[in-house]
Picture 1 (cartoon, rainbow, N blue to C red):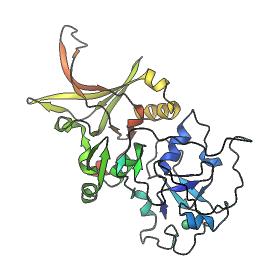
Picture 2 (cartoon, rainbow, N blue to C red):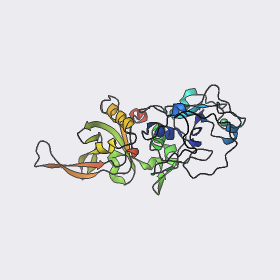
Picture 3 (cartoon, protein in one colour):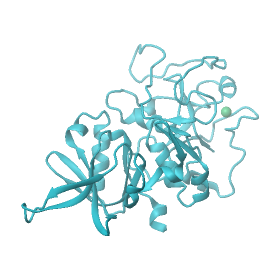
Picture 4 (tube, rainbow, N blue to C red):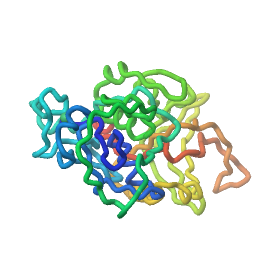
Length: 317
Ligand SMILES: [Zn+2]
C-alpha cells in the first residue's frame, strides 16, 4: 500500500513524500526524515495507536531516484478497521503499484510551502518527542496538503513531474487529470510540452532529452537533443543555469549532485522546467565571431522549477 501523505510527528502536520524530500535537501533546515516518525494520515486511525505505529519512507533521500517515492506500511504497521490505508487490498501484481504516482495534485502552487514547527524546538536536535497518541485534530489549516485525504495542491515540482513521467504510457489518464498552474487550468497532458514544440504556447512545462550539459565558469548550459523549427530552419534549444543562482540555492548540495551526475551520465536523461520559455537569440559564432547564429535559449530563474531525471517510458516509446 502506497501512501499519498503521512502525518509527521515532528512537524505535527501532514506531508507528501515530496515535501519530505524538500525538507531533507533544504540546507537551511535541520530536518532529517530518519529522525522523524510518520504515522497514518487518517486522524481516527492514528489516535487509536501510539506513536510507535509508524510508516516507512521510500526514496525520501535519494537525489536521482528511478522509482516513485512514497510512504508505505512496515510489516508491523497496524490500522483500524475501515482505514483506507490498511494493506488488505494488495494488488495482484504486487510490487508494480510502486511504479506509478497515482495521486495527481490538481494544482502546482508556485509559492513554496513553508513548514512551520508547531512547537518551539526545545531539547536535543532531531530528537523525536515521545508524544502520546492524539485525539483527532480539529485544527483547520490553510497549508497545502493539510486535509485528511489526497493532497490536492503541491508546491514541489517533482510531484506533478512524477505523475506525468510514471503515467506517460497512459495518455487517457494524463488527458483526464486536471492541472492548474498560476491561474491557468489545463490537463497534465497539455501542460507538459515537448521542447521541440515550445512555440505552440507560452508558460507550459517544457521537457526534452538532454544532448549535453556544458560546465562553464559562470553557468551550466543544458542542450536539448531536439531542435525547434522556424521558417523551415532548425534551431538548437538550450537553457542556462547561473552558478550564482546555484550557490545561493537552499538545496545547493543536492542540486549539484544531480547536475554533475547528469553531466557525466551515460544514461538517457531528460530536463523538465517551468517558468521560462526559450526564445530565439542571436549568438556569436565561435569559429567566426563576425557571424551570429540563432538559438532558442532561456535563463532559468528558479531552480525549484527545474528537474533532470530519467524517463523510462519515453525511451520505450
Ligand atoms: Zn490508518
